[in-house]
Amino acid sequence: MLLTDIGKVIVEIFVTHEIDLEKKKKIEVLGVPTIEIDLSKIDRNISELDLQDVLINKNEYKSWVYNDKREEIYKRFLEASEAKKIISRNFALHVDNCPIGKRVWKQKSYANFLDDCQYCDYFICYKSVQENDVDQERKILCSGKRLIAHVADFEVPFEKRLGDF
Ligand code: SF4
Image (cartoon, rainbow, N blue to C red; front, side, top):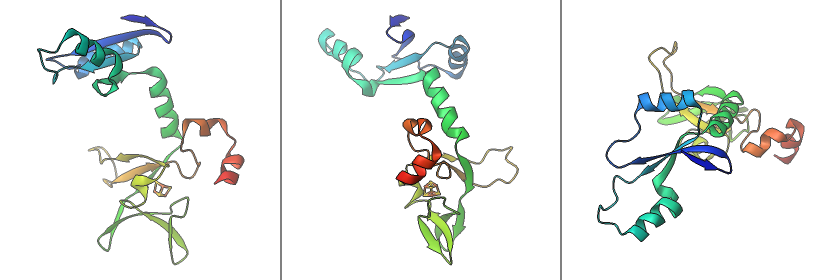
């Protein structure tokens, strides 16, 4: 465990065993931000200097296992979004009632899932079908209705976001 500017941080080094679900749950209960550094594909004969470089400067080897701030922000995005069905129609995947009116057909707005939603700032995530989902339909989470695309948007009144849109 390291003591950093943002408080305590656990650093886990993954060489042969990455953090499993059980350990991840323990870390979440502990509530300490945790980074995993993946050295599993690093050449075992790496020089000390290169290893130092990987550990300190190379972000591509590091990932957050748990970060309370990130979880908090992600939760806010989830709360700001609504689930919208992906509808298969004429060989295309559509999302009806696109809140920003990407496309319009017979005065109804919709978006093309592949061409629009995936590149849209308001696309939060794809929601895969879970076994216990009542309707068993594929959905996306979209924050377009609230016009929340970035963390900073939470601090801006909706009317201002609307005006800037
Ligand atoms: S993710 Fe974007 S394009 Fe897709 S429905 Fe939402 S606002 Fe429209």
